[in-house]
Length: 476
Image 1 (cartoon, rainbow, N blue to C red):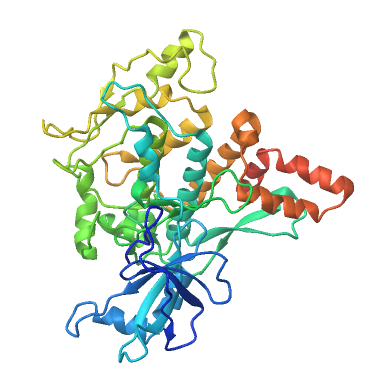
Image 2 (cartoon, one colour; image 1 turned 90 degrees about the vertical axis):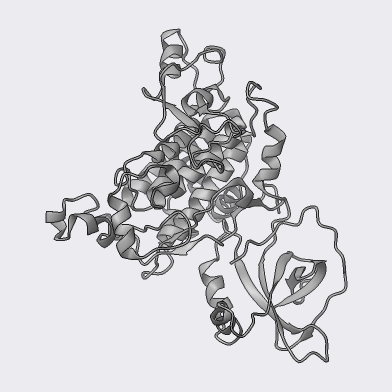
């Protein structure tokens, strides 16, 4: 499915709605942005929330896509797709519009209606911090925005892969019971997005008093629905084949691990063969949840340093990344020199160098390539962010190991829990965190407003304590 486009710089070419309806539509075309692309609204709510409507082009009768046409036009597939692609952190498919282009037309037109991300995408923000040359001082985006994008992307991936979303129970009697994971469908099959990059991270303007508007993952052109159900790997994920009574090469897939190739598709048997090989480059490694998490980490690294973490160069297919073989030599050097700072980029660390760089993958040697070789473990500690955020990003970037079977991740919800705990500690312990306001703050205030007197004060104290997430994690 094509990506819903943001239209922050588009000028409307036609403000006359075309609504020769062939059936009752929930949505109404309002402003044409270009041929086949309109702003839309709900019928009867012309001044309310705006959506994006994209026309599905007609297929030739012998086209490969004729099956899709039949499903969309006659099988009512759009409502089913909208149930699957419906999450606050996805550019969601919300419905469709069926109409005739003019009253005398003998054919119908179908438009898919999606969320409208009216505040552009992350690529536009990253242009502002792009370095002028390789030795430019690092620039960065605000830490609050980094947390916002990190949590949004991890939640989106948790929904796609695990089929779980956060829900709020307003009848909860304690803070630890207010929010919980809910499995949307017991038969959910894991979805891998396979294209998490700044261009597909889109924003909406704030709708209330929150610091930043909604952040959504879009563009599902490369997404794949696997035939594996999350959770079955958890009970014996890394047991030996003898323990699970399966062949050694078949064990990961039979245990329920969602797996695909980087692009396109291949047979299950071919994937089993590839799974045993030591891939010659990141581009040839099989794609699992591990790669989704690494992609999120590389997006955050770009936001925090202004530099791209390029593990698969377009020119050569090789890497531009080296890592410290000790992992944290800059932090150790700073500590020995008397640094006890709880954030990066301090005076103790700005001039330190890493002398232990190594590459997990073959480095790019193309002299025409413009992307520099970067040391992640040198740039991240120099960025002026809290240790809480830096450690979360380092954990995600650690998912670039060469071994095909090491570091496999069964579910995303555990990663999301860990990040939530760090986020709420940042909210409590830092000045920027205390100023930050999210949509969830409104939800929590609604819950608190329903309480009374001393009970409200007790629950408010619980919400201010990040450790209640630890209680939640242990209980779930």
